[in-house]
Image (cartoon, rainbow, N blue to C red; front, side, top):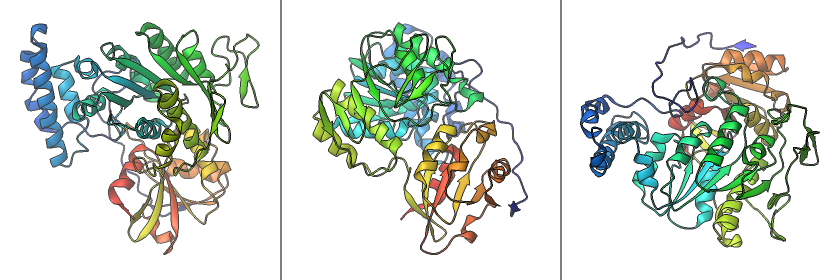
Length: 457
């Protein structure tokens, strides 16, 4: 291991505020700052505006005005994208603001561990009409509020953090219709989100307790299939899945599941259900095949597109050919796989935040001279980096890796055990060459750093 940077950023303690649906969880948005100080000048209004339920319209109007003011200040002060800080203030002033903003709308909620932002973008494109959406990935209640307030379109496609689905469903009782997309479940930020089986149980309770909703479920994932068991209105989707390490045992009886040929089963009778929509070489539905030619790379994006197809075509009755064409036209989602320039070099940015995400990118990254992996341990990333030892880095074809980020030494140690040549540095430019495109795999806050310091080519 070559230690080109021996300094580690000192560990700083960040005070956690807010409340999550899961005990002990934090309500921080991924890579979002705290509200600017201006937000706290509005807090005296809370006690006045929250005094009586008889003034709900006034509370809503004041909350929306405060949100616009705080978000605008946040953007002007360079304290973030202005999508979260104001939402937090608005929810203090009007706790029922989400239900008021969803009233009368056709709502699609997209949740799961991996692929939420891309699937949301593909679903927005597939709808082929004006759609309100939190396309920046701010997927807790504050981000949802900001997205709904900014766009009053009748249809809303919303990315929702997997631990916040129950709260968002509870707030959707005034919506015209609700569709829930369940993508997958795998370990991610266990210090914040807890174990995946707890999330699956939370989903199951929320869906059974909610008003009638339509669910589009990836039943190739046993935990998703468990969450929708017993529901009536479910569109079942089957997609090729290579990661099953987080669902090796049956969620009903805990015996080992058997996997093979895209199916899974247990001796207790819990088995992969038949599907309405399948992904093979093409998307198959209702006896017809629909070829995909996505601009977005990766088999995992084909799976995301299949979920979007099922929602737009099967549930919302859009024309299949138009849906496929719209999804094929999506070239980039929030910087993922985008080639950008920094310090005279070109970099292809990719996001991975857990073992399943690393496994998918290991199959996507081809042979190259050099690879950059950038791992931080911010609140949005998860404090515990031990998951690095569950990620199959051995599948990478590139053998020289530059390690960056606040957890660069932990990462370098993991990769050294895997037999890589490791360079630890804050300045990867010194090891790149003119004209080449260097792949970068980064987690949430590291990815945001790359987006902030680079420019589109």
